[in-house]
Image 1 (spheres, rainbow, N blue to C red):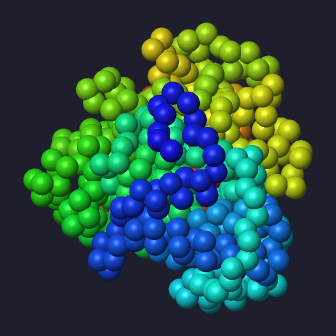
Image 2 (image 1 turned 180 degrees about the vertical axis):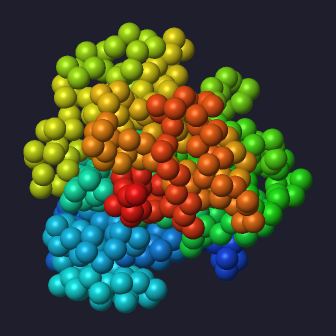
Length: 496
């Protein structure tokens, strides 16, 4: 099975893992331990887990929970669940006890693979499901698997309510890896660097599925380390990496540097999960000499829907790019496509779009309109098809009846070189209904004062859009992907 750059992959994850195993070669290296995992060994581990689940009477399509950090065991468990025809439930380790307990209960999983590091977390969740070992002896016949079968159940962060369980098929997951491989021209010679957790859609579909579909390999770490990132990239000989804006900012403000061989080998870095500040991207590229490709994706779309092209094709700084492997439109509230240059909601349809929200027909129906998935993101599209995100419907600050996009304030704050993280947010106000405040994290040793940042915003945006207060924080709240959780700030930070 080979990558076709014009047609989504056919078959199932079982088919593709079989093909990679038969072709041979290294699937994953682990810089922290020096271990290697071949495609053949990965299939062997996956098949063993699949047979042990089948022997326990797990039905085709039934949920199997996976509670593990990035590791050989997590990969074998994920591939094992999907190889056996089961629905892999990737549990978000950063979600907190209540959210983990909810996901385990809602998924109706009877069995879970629990990594030794996660036993306390699993116990605290109080779930009444059985933890089982990864290895087992069984010759049970596997269930038949077809591309439309459920393969993944992944829960959203639930920042605006109960987490929703996003369901993807085998075909959808493969399409998610395919959109990445096509956009970034990935091939067997490429080795991605997976520092994002694979219990998040970016880590799972962009890097893991991207390597499966393209025939490349991965370097994987248990977690991101700013101090070790470049050394690990050098050791593992990676050719690309996928991270989030907060990681790019931390690397930019860190002391480490890639050596010349690493710089020459790295084709690009990839940014996703939230908007990347223009100044941060430009400063990173100027310092490290590595182009950053800004992209956009969702859990509901098996990650990527938009990407900037690779150099030397035109990248538009400040845009997550154009559609690859799917259709993207900007629509008004009635579902009509708006003219180029006008603001509306990003909608998407294609082979990578989710099947449904599990056991939530109302939410599923509300997310789809005439076959298009509504993302909740506001944007405009230029004449070349590049999308420029202006904000989120749920995050808009409405001050005196005027809409203010928090990202516009973020961009102004990031113009100061000491700002590592920034997020504007709405604060309830009796005079205007809502007013603007912001939270920032600054680099160690900075002498920056809030008044200086407010003045920068006033100069760039005018007084009306500028924050009344800027809060300095040691760390801004983030979800598992590293995305700043803007909607939590008003609750965390006290009003005047």
